[in-house]
Image 1 (cartoon, rainbow, N blue to C red):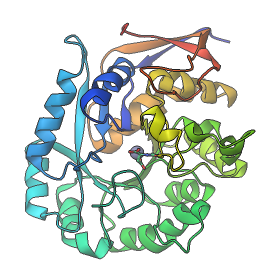
Image 2 (cartoon, rainbow, N blue to C red):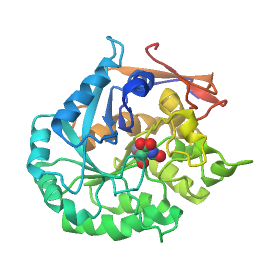
Image 3 (cartoon, protein in one colour):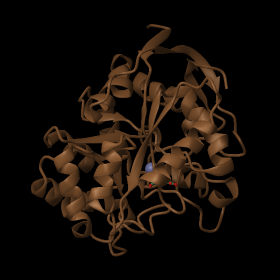
Length: 344
Ligand code: NCD
Ligand code: ZN
């Protein structure tokens, strides 16, 4: 049993860094663990054009310590009105790494999302032509569909037809939570990949109701049954290059989570790598953590692998019950691996 693990520096292929005071509070945690991150554009108002993305990128960098070695990779929030030429221009200028499809009303700040994928058909064709990845929040919003079925139904109704129509479009199905998603991604061609969060490796839907309602375990897509957690775990540790790290760290102020209508999102940035390491360790798959965390993502995105390394030590690390006024994932738990990283 090794008691330390040195990995090529990892990246986070899906994170919410927010803005303003919240950005300043949370971004250093991500920059401490990861070399790069795909930054979600669901601000209010959303990041829908190049100028907004450039300004947001500058605010992110300004929120970090001067010596932080961190590159934010920006995304464009697709709307029914996205102009394909402007999107392509943003990609060509190196501002937009990818574009994000939020079905309208699927999740936090998605009211301006896409009401029907037919409305962004020209943008998707353009992305296919220029090799710009599409990142998908894969849940239908039809209120008739059970909350726990929305990801699987999205695959059948939206994603499978999209892939048939645009087979060369590179797609990341974000934060997968179901056996159906894991199987669909595994059996699809090389243009479809998926990110996996630490929380979906650790919790099933019981965590939402453990002794009472647990708002800090609530995120979207919501955690599913145990069999789905196990399938997502199996995908993460499978060694398949189609699955890679994306924390979906999604902080919300404590009072907006502990509320009669609590926000969706789990803040996992401070101990994200430690959390993944714990899951991989439980699966006897620590030898596959580096590929999942540091290789599969950049290869899918066509970006260079990071130089440099991080080291995890087999040592208990106690997660506090509050960080920056927020309740982190694994609050009050002890994780078995400690990241030696740049101090905050
Ligand atoms: C995210 C957020 O709060 O921005 N919430 C979440 O539960 N994951 C949005 C999202 O990724 O769906
Ligand atoms: Zn997200």
